[in-house]
Amino acid sequence: MQSLPTNIYSVAAVRETDRTTIEDHGVPGYTLMTRAGEAAVREARQAFPDSRRWQIVCGAGNNGGDGYVVARIAAQEGIAVSVVSLVDPGKLSGDAATAYGDFGAQGGAVVPWSGHLDNGAELLVDGILGSGLERDVGGEFADAVAAINGHEAPVLALDIPTGINGDTGQVLGCAVDADLTVTFVGLKSGLFLGAGLDHCGEIRFAGLDIPDAYRETIEPAFRRIDDEFLSGLLRPRRRTAHKGDFGHVLVVGGGEGMPGAVRLAGEAALRTGAGRVSIATHPSHAAIVVASRPELMSHAVANAADLEPLLEKADVLAFGPGLGRSAWAQEMYERISTVTQPMVWDADALNLLAANPKSVGHRVITPHPGEAATLLGATTRTVQADRPAALVRLAEKYGGTVVLKGAGTLVSSSASVPVLCTSGNPGMASPGMGDVLTGIVAALLGQGLDPEQAAAAGVEFHARAGDRAAVAGERGLVASDLMEQLRAILNP
Image 1 (cartoon, one colour):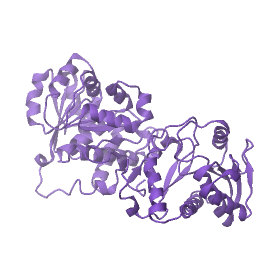
Image 2 (cartoon, helix red, strand yellow):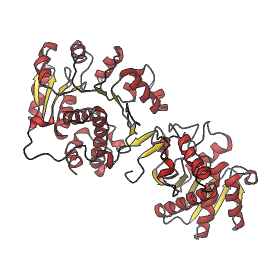
Image 3 (cartoon, rainbow, N blue to C red):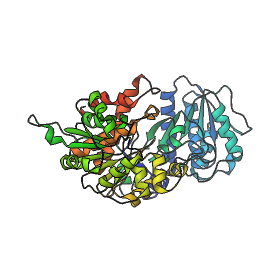
Image 4 (cartoon, helix red, strand yellow):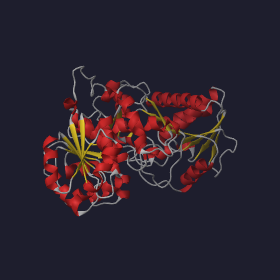
C-alpha cells in the first residue's frame, strides 16, 4: 500500500478531476480511457503472467469503454481475447462508443450475455459497472456478477469491483470478488472502507499521467497515513536524555478478575517509548501485573481517593482497558472524567461515556464499531454501512480526537482532512489488540505529539507492527506478538 498515493477522494471529486483534465486542460477523454486500458493490461500481465486467454465482461458507460480498450490492447499483445456485453454496444455513446468501434475495427468480436462465461478463460476482466453506482445490482448484471464469482479464473476489476459503492465500500446488492483492482485518476474511498476491502483484492493505481497540479483545488476525503506523515514525529533521542523526558503514562483499568488488558496497555506504552508507566488497577490483582512485567509500576486502587497521588504524577492517562462496569469502575469513571491531562479512552470507559455523554477536547476515544454504535445510539450495521459519517457524528458529539477502529481505521481531524489507515491485517481481529493501541497512543502523547498526531501515528505503528508479526501467518496472531515488532517500527 505504501506505493499508493496519499490522497483518497470521493467519487464526485474523482469525477471533477476527470472533468477539469478534459475541459480545462484539453486532454481528450478518449486519451484518458486509452491510458487506463494500457495501465490495466500492464498490471494484469504483471500479476497474472501465465494467463493467455482473457474474457472481458462489459457493461455500459465508461467502465464498459475501459473494457473494450483492454480487449483491443490485450489482443494486440497476443492475448486470446473474448468480450461479452451486457448491453447492446451499438447503443453506446461518447468515448465508450469510440472504444467499442476501435476494438471492432481491429477485428474484435463481441457476443451478447447468454448467462455463461468461457470455462477456459484464464483471466476475467470486470468492466460492468464503475464507481458511480448508486443502486443495487440486479437482473442480468447480478447474474453476470454471480458467474464471475463462480468462475475459477482470477478476476481483474477496472476502477472498482462492480457492486461496490465508490464512497462507502458498501455492497449494493451483490459485488464482484476481484483478485486485482486497477483504479484510475484518483483513489476512491470505497476501495478502503467497509466491504470494499473484501472485494478489491490487491489495489494498484494508475494516475493516467494527470499532473498533480490539476488536483490542487480538489479536496480529498481522506489522507492515508504514509511514511511522509510519520517521518520526523519521533526524532532520535539526545545522548543526555532521561526517562523524565518521555512522559509518565498512567493506565487506569483492570476491574476485578481482568488484569490482562492493563498489562497489555502498559507494556505497549513502554515499548512505544514512554519514560514511565504506572498501572492503577483493582487491588485483587495489582501484584500479578508487576510480577509479569517488572518495569511497570503497579498500584492497588480501591477507590477514587487512591488515585489522587497517581494522578498528580501522571502526564497522560490511558483509561478503560479491562475496566468493567462495576461500582468500582463507575467510581474510577467519575474521577477520570474531571482530569485535565491528555488521555486515551477505550473499552468500558466508552460504554460508561455513552451513558453520560460529554464533549472533551483533550481526549482521544478509540471505539470499535460496536462501541461506536453504543456511543451513537445506533447499530453496528449502521456504523459499518457509512463509517465516514459515523466518524463525523462521533467527533461532533464527543469532541477531541476519534479513532474509529476496524478494517480501514479512520482518525478524525479538527483542522484538516481525516486520515485512513491502509496497513494492518485480519489476524489483528483478536483479543487485546485494542489495549495495545491504547498504550501506544498514550505513549506518543507523553512524548509530545498532539492528540491528532498521536492517534494517527499510533494507529499506523500498531497496524505495521501487526503486519510484521503476521509474516509467519495471520491466523493465531495474538496482541502480545506486536510488542517486539514495535521497536523495529519505531526505530527504522
